[in-house]
Amino acid sequence: MLLSRLRDTAAAALVLRTSGSTALSPPSFLYPASLIRPTSGKAPSLLAATHTSPFSAPVCAAVQSKRLLGRSQSLFRKNTASALRSFSSSARSVCGGLSNAEARAAVEAALDALAEKVQEAAEPKRELLKTLRKEHGTVVISEATLSTVCGGMRGLTAILTETSTLHAEKGILYRGLTINECLAKLPRMHKEEYPAVEGLIWFLMTGSIPTVNEVELLSNALYALSLSSASSSPSAPFIPPHVGKVLDAVPPSTHPMTQLVMAAAALQPTSELAQAYRHKTVSRHDLWKPALADALSLIAKNAVMAARIFRRSFRDGQEIDPVRSLDWAANFGHMMGFNSKEHQELFRLYLFLHADHEGGNVSAHAAHVVGSALSDPFLAFSAGMAGLAGPLHGLANQECLNWLRDVHCKLNGAAPTRENVKKIAEDTLASGRVIPGYGHAVLRVTDPRFTAQREFALKYLKDDELFQLLNVAYNTIPDVLLATGKVKNPYPNVDCHSGVLLQHFGITEADFYTVLFGVSRAIGIACQYVWDRILGLPIERPKSTTLDLLKAACVERKGN
Image 1 (cartoon, one colour):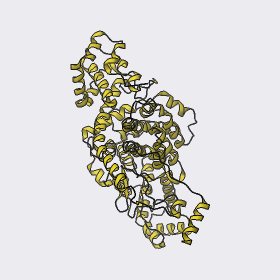
Image 2 (cartoon, rainbow, N blue to C red):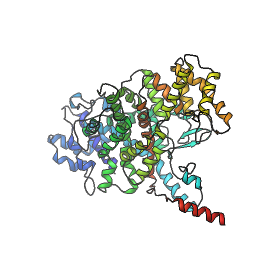
Image 3 (cartoon, rainbow, N blue to C red):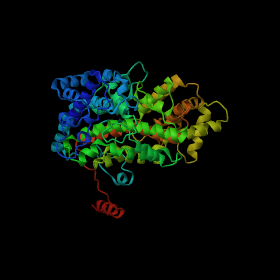
Image 4 (cartoon, helix red, strand yellow):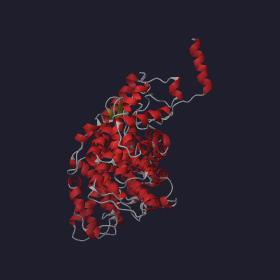
């Protein structure tokens, strides 16, 4: 099994670093390219690779010792986190204090534990899908009318997504749990107010609530995958130098979403799945395993590239490296240049709330379609972000913020009240415009993600002028919309609030807001991709029609 071989390799590296008295340079012989990306046949074993080692005979003999390898596996499984912290500094590279071997050990420790949980969840789901197809394949789940065909397929249930679903009364459900249930049940790494987003990643991948140790294991891996290297070694987990060069090829004034799409595509050469499929080293049944490795790599590296885009487009261009002691969300804020405790809690909440939203929205669906062709997660995510860049999908929170600012200007210094906000809202509707941030295609209640942000604001920015205006609007606009008799759901959604939070905490560059959304949504897209491969979903190929054929069908139906 590929993951087991990688685990054994990384484990041996751990023992060599912690048991010997001689400081070793990074043991590159433990990570030959043929082991990670074999060109043909079965991957060579660890022992077969050692004959080319530049190290001394005693070291090679130690690696070949079954007793040492057994000890290394135990150390790797049980004490990876503490072992990583105790490595000799003389053996470290400049990549955040981790060598190639150390970083890969951290990544493989998390992958090994995560893959075991995913496999446990996968088998019953595969059997269920097999049974449903065999025994109920002709059951009608949803019907397409002419309005469905011509109206963006709204309301058509035709995509299988395991990670989340949208409930009209409960809002988005992550693996069947509401937002509030997830916030309550997912672990904190220390004593933070909001759970570590690593816990949500684990939960979406496995369907089980992780322990604190499992969250820390995943956090170590994401940190290792976030590091950059001057080396372009294909077996290294670090971000290769060519990705930064791709961004440097365009002006900093290039729209941040364009840069994010470019960065995601530039990361594609690091894909384990692409190499495994190309060299036929993994069966179709097991493609989810390299997909899982790519998923973690995508989540980690995408956040780094987003922070770099922010720094080069809106700050001094100086990159900020991740910090080993921070969780993933806090590290993202740190790499952008925001380090207060309040900022850390904001990023944990924001990245948690926007992580997944079924599979039918433009970005998730685009990534799903591209992934169904077995394009790797990096290419699929790049396609999804190209969809998110569209103004009808990714500009919602900016439009909400702009409307609030417009109302603030029209108040001309007056305090917001239900009366004056109601008048402005009615004038907006009378002019033929919509009030952004209110209503939802599925929800029939206030979006729980809005409520979570409001509770955050009441604690951290209750005196902020825009928040006070938003609070009045929240208590006023639903009644205005209901009075029109045309709105099924007049309540605020998630986009109604996020811009106010970001503005208050100094993230005022509205063009970057969609990138922030993309950093969070990488979680859902990556998790959905893994489960699409687990379930063996086929390439997506719906049938299309023409207006003339639609007309003919309508005439025939009318005649009958």
